[in-house]
Length: 453
Image (tube, rainbow, N blue to C red):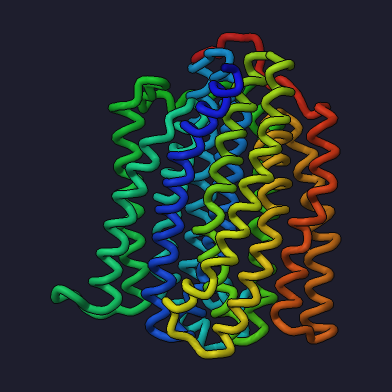
């Protein structure tokens, strides 16, 4: 019965998150396919802008993960007041940073996009998209923080429903604004950006309405946004900063990878863009289970039941490994059919096919090590360990090796790509040792009633 209750809870948390991620990444896939029909120059231009979006996404993902690490433990001990305070801290931090990034992209698009490519034609096309898409940053950050706050208290269905609305709206607007259907102007990549902006505004509005007027678990009020508990603020940065910094560094890592790929030619850029988008959709189960695991482990650590934590940890590792094998096999089997959707050159098609084959193997490592380190170790309180581990592998192995292979040896795109993904397998050795030592269990909550300032 205990096993059934555990798997049921994991499923009820993970399934809506997985579906939400499928829909969210399907929006990106739809953008990718629709823009891809305009040619390799357009898809390459959007790819450059997406490197900036990745940095923001990883940053706000870090804020959300930090919120869940701390908030889930307070929710586990039934301290809702502290949970709301942590959400408020995370939201203010995310809003400030989104505004700063908007200013950088809107005012200096040439300089920012020039970091990812030296092709003037690609940069020019990318600026059309960037000048509009930068206005989505604020709405995206607000939605992401509130989505994370709902997840940390076990409310996951609303995120799914909002994603369904976003998907339908974004695809419809893309169809109208990219190609000029229903009397709308044919705006190409700029139309795709406008469609995304409208979708983000609607998405954010629904989250705000739900949080402030419908949700009963936190019962958030606007005055809660102004309240700050200094102890929680210090704890958020003490335990959350390694999480946020880790995700920022991961975002920078992806941006550097994008810059490396961006100098391998338009065909390589297009191939990697296609592969990354497809992989994002296919691997949603892996990331959904990891997110659900972080909530379960965080809540359980907050409850203080060590025996239960150890039992859950052993079961989760088996789930992670099985999920990775299934995902890798699925990606390998569908790769040829997915590529039929794209009208690209034979070189791009062949390169993308090889890269998908590589990912179908490395995703097994991703499923185990990423889920174990973020869904268990980090959620359990050992936030510094995951940061240090990522720094060693990313900046000590992946980036230097990839740079040497790309620009020193002049290796083909698939070899460079393999180097960029090698850490996904190498980290497994670290993960299996760290997770099963159980020295990552750290209760982060304080025994106090937060004061109202």
